[in-house]
Amino acid sequence: MFDTLTTVLGYAFLFFMALGFLLQILGGEEIDRDVPYAIDAQLAYRVLCAKLLQLNGRLDADTYEVHQKFTPDEPETSELRGSLRDAAATTPLGWQRSARDLAYRFKRFPDTLLDRFEHLIIQMNASPDGVTVSGQAALVELARLWGIGPNKTLEIFVEWRVQPLQPVLAWQDTARSKR
Image 1: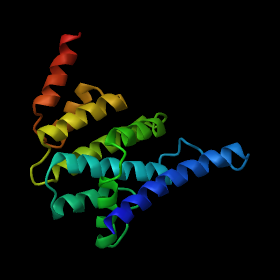
Image 2: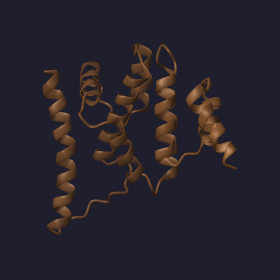
Image 3: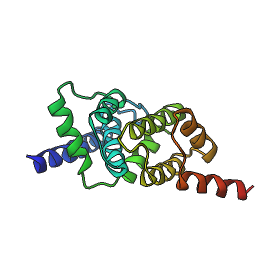
């Protein structure tokens, strides 16, 4: 069953991407690639969240509760939520691919991108171990990919009472030394 969900989620993502491409080629109604709440953006964000939460460490009921609040269009039943999250966590695409897709999607909506980054920090901080070193390293890489600077990243960490660890502090020092 787990493999089936993984396959279904992967095919659903590919189907919606292919459908948009085909509609454009065939002269059908054009899909606006810049609308941030389209289904493919929701799927990409869900995959990104699941992968980064998994990378960050252990998850518990509080983590899932916070994740539900910040994941768009999350199903109502906890069994289905867990299945979708598990399937997203095992899709063959790495989290960087989802992050690049979202960066492309939100290039005209930088505030939305910044909100999504902040939501990821909040979700990761809700895990039993908080935002771990590996989680912060992934967030630094994500911030670079999304064009969020080290000062803004540190500001968000401070705002949500997340102790910056080596990856964030090293990035901050590197940025300072380049000035």
